[in-house]
Amino acid sequence: AYRHRPTFSKLVLVFAASGGGLVAYADARADTAAESPGVAPKKKVVVLGTGWAGTTFVKNIDSSLYDVQVISPRNYFAFTPLLPSVTCGTVEPRSIVEPIRKIITKKGGEIKFWEAECFKLDPENKKVYCRSNIGTNLEGNGEFLVDYDYLVIAVGARANTFNTPGVVEHCHFLKEVEDAQKIRRSVMDCFERATLPDLDEEERKRTLHFVVVGGGPTGVEFAAELHDFVSEDLAKLYPTIQDLVKITVVEHAEHILTMFDRRISKFAEEKFQRDGIELKTGFKVVKVSDKTITMENALHGESSVPYGMAVWSAGIGTRPVILDFMKQIGQGNRRVLATDEWLRVRECEDVYAIGDCATMSQRKVMEDIMEIFRFADKDNSGTLTVKEIQDVLEDICIRLQKVKNLPATAQVAAQQGNYLARCFNRMKDSAEKPEGPKRITKMGRHHFLPFRYKHLGQFAPLGGEQTAAQLPGDWISIGHSTQWLWYSVYASKQVSWRTRALMKQPLLHVTKEPT
Ligand code: FAD
Image 1 (cartoon, rainbow, N blue to C red):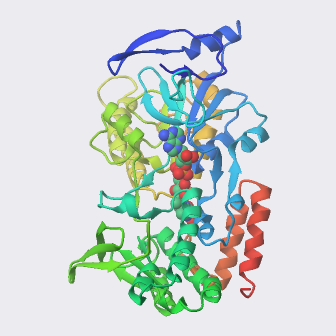
Image 2 (image 1 turned 135 degrees about the horizontal axis):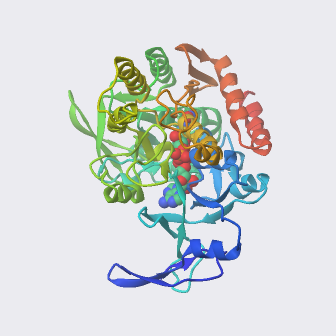
Image 3 (image 1 turned 135 degrees about the vertical axis):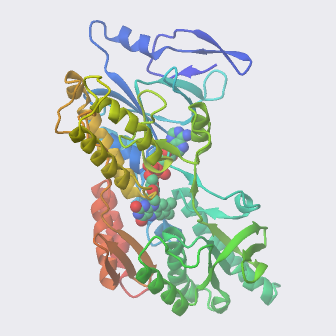
């Protein structure tokens, strides 16, 4: 049985077969109407997730127009680009998190927040099944049900192990603030263990071998942070073992930072070589045990290396709740949930997906093409003029060019959250003008312009107070001055003045000589 969310007073029990038993749940629509007789209830917008996409949506939606409910197992927003800095203590965790309730309060407090995770979506009945790990209902399982008029899925992604044996059991991930804190403790544990008496040299070396799997921006930044931490701080605290420390980055591709311009990846590889960070490019990790990592290489075959601590940062995958949802709606053959250019999940009504949990699909655009033709044939004559065909083809060409796989970044997630909130804010207006103003799309079929990503540049901090940046127009900047640009941009992107001020403290600290 599911406990209904606490604000609903009247419980309407409905029995439905579920897993061989009967479940009782509340009809939230009936409740809302009963609570405000005579007044049309506001449409319910349920947002899943408090990451970049969800939080940006919540910050920008006009909460006077909708009954907004946010559901997430995390009651705070985390500024993920600074997570690698938390692993080594350059930045404190509290400097990069902002309570979601604070963000909501700033908006007038109309938005509700439930700390719970959604474990099942029911698009047919427009309901989401949630489970709280803190509250418990009468059955003690913390489960409850929330219904929606519009659903915004922004649950992000999970770390992808590619089913490599031993990864979950033995590797650290770097996705959440807790992960960063665990890594920090684990690094210190390795150093303490390596100083214990009665350990032979080989065992000390193994304990101090830090392996980073994945040469993308996160893995590279963590390796660089760790190198700085070891050489600037830990070397002084553990002088007898400092020479035994080794950091290795394993990357399946031929280079690290492949998503950046080759000049940046080359600079990073050379810097890592100078810093003594070993790069194993062209190697794929195939197994991890408690003490060794086994990898494969086309030239050298399989080899195993002993290690003390490993961080797995090799990519992201779809969360189980989304995989289940995809099967339900006929997207079971895909790896990532597909949306159209308006960020709608086309197979069900009033469901949107933004951020890392979804991707805009070219296939969806192709499916849309038939609709475009139908729309162009306004008088149902079955014939189009040359001018009409030209317009349609032009629209298709532009759209296919623009819908390419977007990177899974905070930048994309935040822009999508912002775009969708603006669409919601204008939805009522456009419903009153069903044809939509012509200016909005060339074909006039949609009320809103499709989502278009604007790339504002990308940073790769490389340690030693050096950062590489690839800015729009393929403008490359590398070095100490770019580090200041990186700090300035990230400070400006902070969600509150509190985190902005806290972030500046370590900034001033790290640019001084280490103490
Ligand atoms: P997330 O930010 O991951 O948020 C997902 C939210 O959904 C969370 O609140 C989570 O608790 C919640 N959730 C999960 N499951 C459920 C559920 N079942 N029900 C309800 N809620 C759920 N990007 C950049 O652009 N620049 C960078 O420098 C950068 N650095 C990064 C460094 C690190 C270490 C990491 C991990 C990522 C970095 N990224 C960076 C990528 C960026 O963080 C992600 O692309 C971004 O967080 C995606 O936003 P999102 O809202 O889709 O997902």
